[in-house]
Length: 208
Image (tube, rainbow, N blue to C red; front, side, top):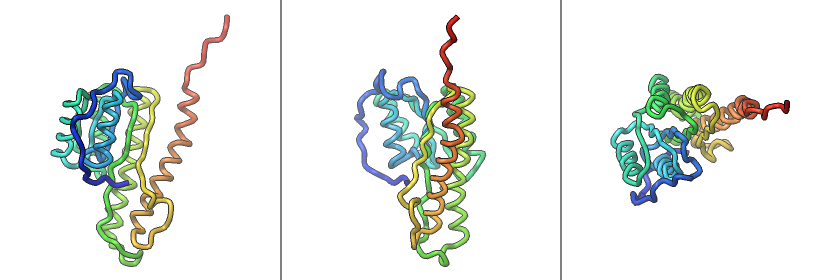
């Protein structure tokens, strides 16, 4: 689901030492506003150290300051999901700052700029939807899987999508197609990496 501006309060409770994410490091894209910013504040309240990623530095700085003022830990990296180098650098920055990655919330997305049926979708609009809303998620997933493997060993990745990905849309065909693609990417990642995570759980030593 695309992030959008929402009002919020900055007097959030201090992070819980025994919260659900205590000791974890989380990467959140689209974290400058809306759902991403709200998720970042929630994750921080639950004890996670956060790396905020989005295109607009002023927004990222504001959210990071809110989290710190509430007693949490947050850094940020300016990140353009359409730029492979930028995406990988943002994930790498998480490990550089905190030494590990445990959790990722891929929330960043681009709202469609044109509403109309299939034959009215401009090629440039379709390409932009693809590069941000589908390719960007794939780039982030690949980088995050690698980072989790080499640092925390196991973790969790959540991809935020849209109800538009569950059915065809007569006036948002490109947007819906990319969101359905996100569903498929997510399922494929779960099938590929879920069993490996289970298999990597250490077994108790055999009795001697």
